[in-house]
Length: 506
Image (tube, rainbow, N blue to C red; front, side, top):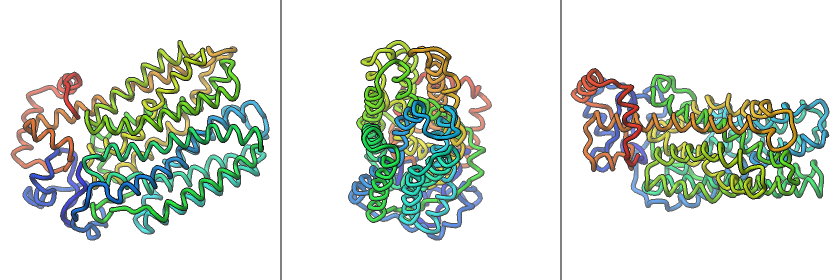
């Protein structure tokens, strides 16, 4: 991936017929200018073209490491907090303290908060464009803290729905959208590692609050547990508002809420498929693991420990995933990691999960279950380019609203009427298939990229530079004719399947 164009007048090009060119050979602005003014860009509709300024030299990382720490804190107090909902869910299911609520309703609350965070992304993207990153983040911090205060006074189902479901999801969405695209702007060579390091905050948050929430509920009660969380998350997110800095103008980022041209890109739909099925499996696991432990006959402390180990795995595993992505290729790691998540769901969770030691071992594979989060940004930039990353992710989160909302509802509805760990057998099988479908989507996306580079005839060194830089340019007219000729001569479906078995660093 590259940091962006070196000219304020250069729009991000179309991905319909696009390839990757090393940024040290041909700057994006020069490349697009050489092709001609008739080539239409995906970002032609953006009103921010005049705001993009010429890219300036800056030290790799630099203040970016402060930004990484800030985004790490935001992830800890957004996705980390929602990971602890497994503890609240287990408490709700056995306490009966909320009037008019059913088990499926509690499952819906967890999914609703996640989906609201994704659903609000276009509004948050517009807020970044008009108000700036810091104000958008502060709005999220206020909404998130207010949701916990409201939940502490909730006694009926509708009150919990509005507070812990809707309001918390809105706050988390503003915080998440404001910071998700910042870290890649500060790095080039270590971009995947830095991004994964920042997303690791959600794992540490899940670990901290899974143990802390259980202790607070036991010793202080549900009401004060919520109030302490409100104070903690507002303090942390408020401090990040003071230190976070973006480089939106420097990289010419396009904050467009909806970009309709993306819907006509087949590779973008493969990218969506990877996230759609992956988040379905991930949410089922993260919200069900504590209740599964209780159903298997373990104590509430053991259930919270299993949930904590799952989040610890993500905290430690995500930076490792970032390092591997930089070395082995982003799509390779994303695909293989999702395949591992499928295998361990089918075998470890089903056959070993009935024993506490086996459940802990399965929980330690949490990093691959949540591999979507450290890989989504770098992989998206591979598909659409760094300029269109905010716009692509805005649409992406909207599409993922459905699986995020109903994943846990589907999971609990698949539970069998029996006693013991076998009650979750259908859920475990369904989760395994979701991860496998996610793997197939990513591997087909990887196959698409191999075909694109082969059709352009990139040499080995150019392909290596393309993998690292992701500077997106239009095809020349001659290359377009060659690509069309190649597609007529070779069956595209066969080519895609064949490329799935080619070993390359992508």
